[in-house]
Image 1 (cartoon, rainbow, N blue to C red):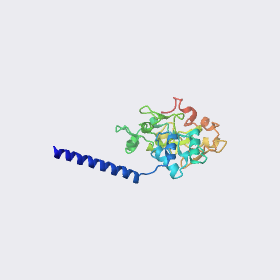
Image 2: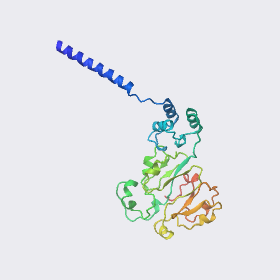
Image 3: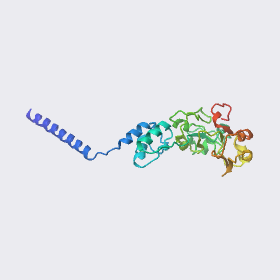
Image 4: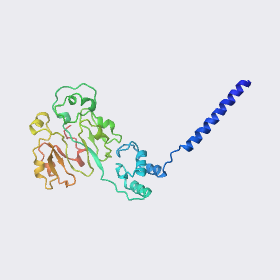
Length: 273
């Protein structure tokens, strides 16, 4: 019994010494956290969506305090939150214009097929196999990778059809933009109206051969725009939203119906795809 008692006492003593050593180490090597970091993290949405470029809201709050990162990088921050962060940091905070994601293709399901793709149902994987059999190299492959990654429920998807992004729900975090292997999802101002739902850089004759709704570069939208907000750049049509007044002339004149009204497109079921 004496040997067992001594062993127990030795173990207890070792445990006490180890605990004391850990307690001392925690004090000596403790990393002091600025209390403002926790307060700012509490103000941030807590979605950890990485839209600000940081992996988490805590890391972003640390960057605001320690690196001078601007609070307006948070895509979900609202006026009251910005005001509170400004008060904590002792400086005025201005929010950026809210952005939403849009898909620059509505012809994916109706574009010509080169072969029947039977592989794994993923845009990223299908992109390695001739775009899942699609003749247009700029089209949406419609497997819904963007739908899978959206944590806010802003994207709806029916198998085989081009996903839809609800501008009222989208936060503009940019995850779907980074996920799309075709690079056909863009961020635009939430107030934007006209949107060219085609990314093809091919000539009109090529587009006609592979898609029934693709942009054929007729340039009628460029000519009709009274504010010079539309231009033919690097093979496709671009809209300068700083100049666009949402007059709707380009939407009305497009012979392919591929320029749509973003404020109405989510509820319109007759769109291609």
